[in-house]
Length: 120
Length: 107
Image (cartoon, rainbow over all chains, first blue to last red; front, side, top):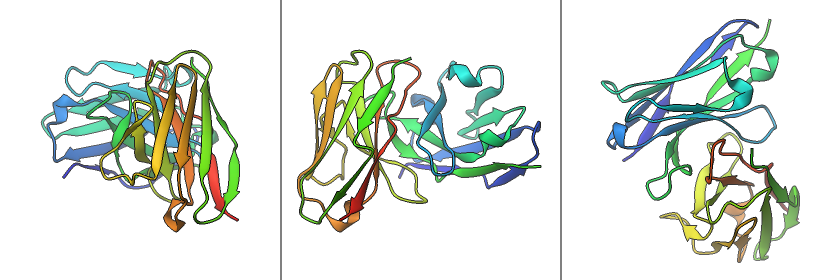
């Protein structure tokens, strides 16, 4: 069965960086893209960006350009999202999500979420 | 960027009620729209893709319709497990924006 398992919760100080991992299993990793979506406490869902697990091509949300980097390691079927220069409003649950089998750009499997808290 | 606007932001309903949620895109997105259900503390779950296609395993009381800029999600007979927040999301182009969400609450 398809699973996306994310790394554990993180607490970071403003200005620091965080790197969240998402380990995929149950499918051919390089056949599907991965998006990252975040959700601030009590707020809605925000799409952060996408990476092709096939060739590493990326597309980032404009507001995060320059602070976010998404990568994959095909040898371990793991996707990574690094966010730099953290601010308090980056406090959120971060999800990885797989491109849908039927429609790219919809997300049919999600990780369990990783809480990132930014606080001094 | 394509803006997605959902209405209402919340709705109170009873078990057995028919509930309809609307989503409007700021520009045409053909049928590239998905609906998700999210319960507190859990990841979103895909319900509908391509505006009207039911994701495998999702009960048939959920249905989606629309194309272009206007879309609806309908729950034909609300069940206790359906109380949650629902989001639309466009898959037409990057960035894949979400609507603001609709919370379905118990009346």
